[in-house]
Image (cartoon, rainbow, N blue to C red):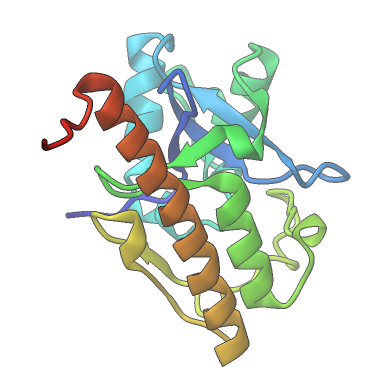
Length: 195
């Protein structure tokens, strides 16, 4: 199954979004996203084709690809989306990244993992599309591959401590998720006590 960067949904509503900027300057816990469901067909098709392209998948931020690509009407995508109010600011803990169908990770968690791998603070993750000299090459960027389950995240770690911290975080998250699933199951069909 193909893994796609920059693809997510809004937590709770499930509305699909493309994440243009994972963080903002001076506001590392907010992102700019493009909701895709209300886009006109020609814009929707063009932006989906772009996010699936090798160019977009190699981009550190999707905004880089948006800034150098044109919509069918000839306008550059990023300025067009901005001018038409289609870039929406959201909290990173409200965006679930969905690189593979059936799996997700909160953007806030993904940003934390990337920052830890780079040895920087989350505040330092922001890079504008025009800061090409600051953008790390593809070889220096962290490789994150998410398989069909959230627990099977394969990440290259800089140290054993970083890897241990990641696994502890995942274990805590799974314990909370298991408790939530158990609560939902009990609401649907309470466990019958044997006599």
